[in-house]
Length: 314
Image (cartoon, rainbow, N blue to C red; front, side, top):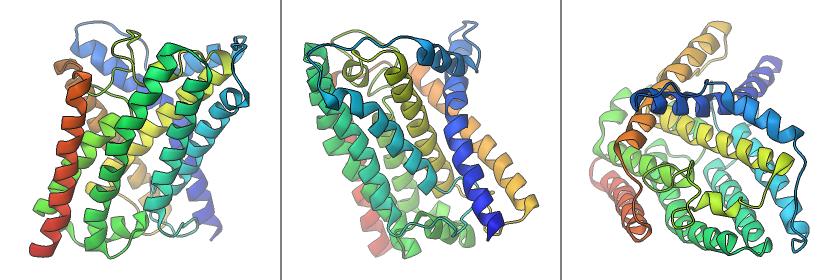
């Protein structure tokens, strides 16, 4: 039991402390693909340290919501990192119905960020908040349905049980519904984490900003917490993509050997997904805003088809 608790803590530390490294790997890979030298993979850590040391500048028009939001956002992501199985499917920290709980945590963070964008009183903040809420109305149900498509085959909404079912039935990954759910989840993950072609995390153009518009008024420690939470969210989504749909290497039993193997498998899966994401962002331009609902609507239909396929292709 003690070893399971230690593994749970280790999983959480990997997600929390390794998230900035994942962001650094994606940025460095994009730079290499574009023919640039690019920053170090450890640059996100240095950026966070710099922001934590900077003085905060807060508008006089803001209320307690603006100051409270960064702590809500980082807390929700820390809890999400605790829920998601990263190395093993241990039951020591099992949460019933954790798919629903995970989506509520994501929505809670997005809701407070939208309120903070409005609270600052800037035109950009209100614009970003309205765009985020419009995208969330399409993205969040799609995430739920895509995961429920594979939850139906596992007979449980618990993430640990879903991964165990995939491990015991390797042919499940060749099921058409499973593949449809993967592509649906991948598309919506791009929207949830603010990546191209839905959003550009490196832009500051007022006509294209979505997530960046909401946090434009933040600085110093508050901005560091929000950037850190965004990195954890990206880590969580890529981990879900890797472990739910390709559960190779996830430890079903807790031993030192299986944990080391799971860590190696996680590194490979996240590395492959990071390279694929960097290549996708290098080759694609940002979609026009009125085209984004069409993309998310397509991912929603893929998720529905994945659920329907369960009724006919068991």
